[in-house]
Structure formats: C-alpha cells, structure tokens
Image (tube, rainbow, N blue to C red):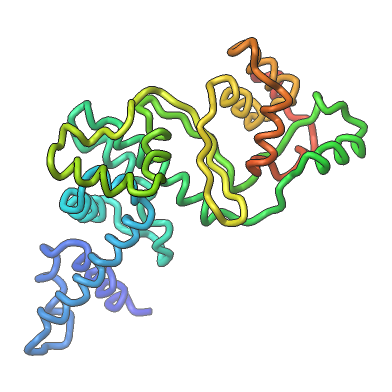
Length: 280
C-alpha cells in the first residue's frame, strides 16, 4: 500500500471523527459537485454507528442522563476515544473514565459507577463461552485430585466478574430492569433533573455472570463479595470463607457456595496451588 493511500485513509478517518478535519480531506479526493455532501453522508453514518454502539452498551446510563445529553456525550467521547477496532462491540470501553473526568456535579458521581457496571455487563455478554462448574462436578473433581473440598481453588468463569460501587450502581441497574421503571425514570429526568436518582445510592456489591446467554447481576453482601474476591485472587475455599466469616460471623458458607455455583461463577478447579498464601 502506497504512503499516499495510507495518508488518505488516515485523513478520511480523521474527517469522519471531526468535522474540522474535512477541509484537509477534500483535496485528496476526486473532485465532484456533491463531494462535500457525500462526505457528510459518511460522517452521518459514522455518527449514527457510534451512537448505536454506545446505546447498546449503556442503556441504563442513557435513560438516566436523557437523550440529548447522551448524544452530545457520545460525540465528545468519540473525539477523544475513536474506535480502534472494526468490532464496534469493543467501542465504549473508556466511557466510565471519560465521565469521571467530565467535571459533573458530585450528586451525579454515580453515573461513572453505572457506566462501569454496564461495561462489565456488556463484556460478559460477549465473553468466551465455557462450561460451568456444577456442585457434582466440584465434588467429583476434588475427589479425583484427592483434595478436601476446603482446600480447593476455583477458576472464575470467563463471563463472571465482581463489581463494587460506592454510589449504589447495582441497585440503580437492577431497578431499571423492572418493567416500566426505565420509562418512569426518564419522565422524572425530563421534568426535574433533581429527581434523576431512582433509588438510594448506598455502597453495594455485586456479581455479574451469564447463564444461557442471559446476563445476571446479583446483589450480594460484603462478606460474600470479599470471599469471592479472595477466590478470584487464588485463595482456597477455606481461606475465602475465613475472610467472609471475619466480615460477617453468621455468613452461611454452604448457601454461599451453592449460590455461586448456580450463578455460573466458576469454570473449573485451578490446576495448581499458587502463591496466594505469600501474598496475604
């Protein structure tokens, strides 16, 4: 590919992202009476594409901020973070960081957390598929390895992720999954910006997973979350549950493990003992 063609492609990409770059592009194209109009059509299609990509990944955030704000945010975001891939499912990964640096009022700080959660939900949906570890599988594999169940270390499923929010993002997201809630929240947003908060914005903890191609976001207590965090770091079940019981003395170990397996949190047993103990 000639250097001239490479530069022309780069110029075209810059013009798609920023209208101020269009004059730089035009001299490199074949003259035509409708050249600017044709470039405008490409720019319109690109703008629509990035907007659809962000709307698909961030439906709750779109509902919270309103259509006009979301459109302007999408345009500003695309200028600073243009797509680096032909796969538009990857576009939008830095939106939470963009929001964090947007200078929003403190009362809207939870927008960043909602964006982080929605990107986890989005990436979980497109994550690689793998078999889930069931309770019978767990018991059988532990026996095959001559391991006590308490000594087992578990490998997180590719679709499973932990989430923590200081601003109630999990409650906000779950509330918007209720029939009719999103529409009511949008009405509130349009009539009074001060009513944008649909639920109490308290710190909360959650688990994101995908079962049968359906995304699940589970709200959990801090003890359960900290146990899962330890497992994710490589701790044995015994070590993880020890942390949970230190956080909450009445934590139900059996119920916790059963729930996590039901939610599809694990893919397999970790094949070797790592250095977790030395990291504590």
